[in-house]
Length: 70
Image (cartoon, rainbow, N blue to C red; front, side):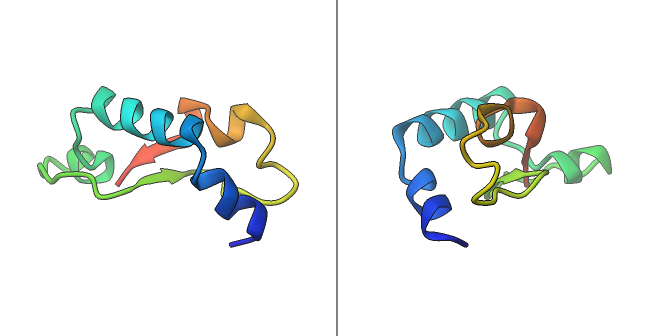
């Protein structure tokens, strides 16, 4: 993880997005739920990993279409 992405994960924007996204999926792991298993989510994952080149793109870093609760 780069210094820039570490800084990103400390921002209030990420913390708010992470919290709101997790609440939107009921706090459950989406991969587990797709298999009929109910487990709490432990992390909010970026489907397209954050890099120095894309961390400033809010569609990738904060966009719900790029997030998954795991």
